[in-house]
Length: 208
Image 1 (spheres, rainbow, N blue to C red):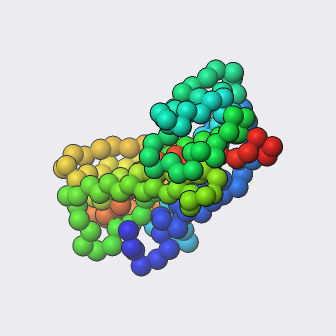
Image 2: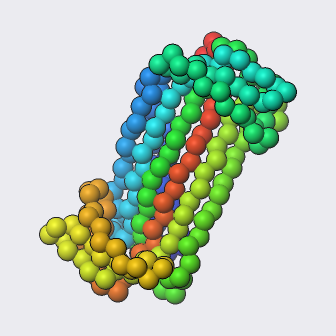
Image 3: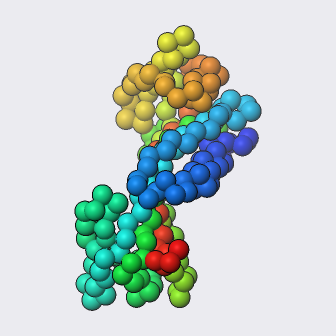
């Protein structure tokens, strides 16, 4: 997405950074925290993200099978398999803390002229720790499509739009930042919507 002004990707990045900074010790019991951003100054982009975070304790590590047993804050145990993309698993010790963050959000922005209306783009990303560092990594996926605005009701905060498959949807806009953007839309406008989700895992020593 490359519109001429500061748009949804920048807002998404700011949301993720602020979400990480504000979680703190609330992760010990598990938390779900909505983080929101207002539209940009032109009113042609908006984004929102919800962060759910939980911290578990490593109970056992089987390097041969790459199975890790975790104790959740509620006392229940869960067994997860660390895939090949998880580096430095040998550094994980019983008693280490594992913080898992789940991000889910939506971004919207006015599409630039000539945007494809019949395509749905799926993008996957992965990040992992350098060799020798403590295990940390993230995986995510974003689904992007451009829709055409058919009708806008700013009094009831309702919008009708047609998606890539030619189907028209009627949506009640709830989030304040998207309502502000709604006021700038008119029939015939093209809007790019991006739904994204990601999971980040960080392992730290038991002494932390």
